Length: 220
Image (cartoon, rainbow, N blue to C red; front, top):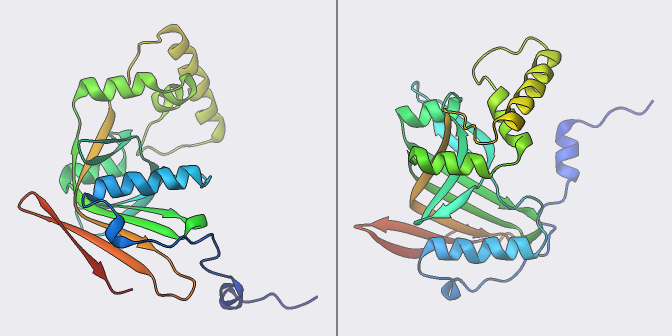
């Protein structure tokens, strides 16, 4: 039996920045970073990037410890990145205590990242309810059955809860989970990062001050 390669050996053998890396003229990008993001997001969709709306959301707990997870971009409204969650989740509770947040997208086939830093706020109840009702019955049933923060004692317990919730959703199609929330992250900083196979990565950085955006390039 051959010895198993170490994690270090496996990591060293992996290629990086192997996608179809486009060239970017940073001065051709829109002066507004939200518009620049929309251009890059459309390019990711056109390129067939899997789940291009997946983004890492980082929040901070009351002890100062960071916490990160992957969520889906639900909308881009009034210059803010919007995602959905339940008020009982860790991320919602952390944002209620400290609204500072960071988002990051990674579109590997294009070698592109987008990073957003800003302040989050919860949207109004009517907007949250409308978002919930636009979701599929299966998605609404899963949200109804979920009990964030509680211990799950068995898979069967969860399966039974989802089945019961789906039955209720079918009976009450206008039912809205009262803890359903949309959060919007208003950006203070946005960075568009284009990878380069020679490691001469391009960083286009936007910073907002006094309500206006300034743009500059950053060293890799």
